[in-house]
Length: 74
Image (cartoon, rainbow, N blue to C red):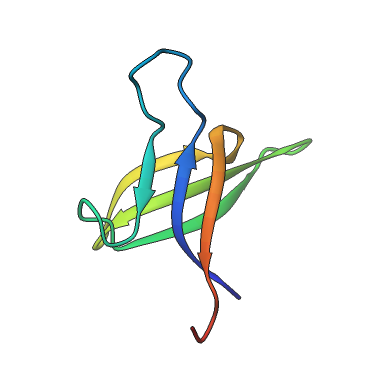
């Protein structure tokens, strides 16, 4: 299984703005995990951004444009 190194949000529609990015090793981010919330007829996939033991942010996978992985054992 691969480890998530970073997640990047969708490109903003306004000039001069940048997409939201959470990258392990930057701005206190120590890890990024994922989970699925089962709501019966459908599920929502979440990415959880961690700073130590505290959840720093959570992004719905629907609004994530790119996920970077680190190969296991690399």
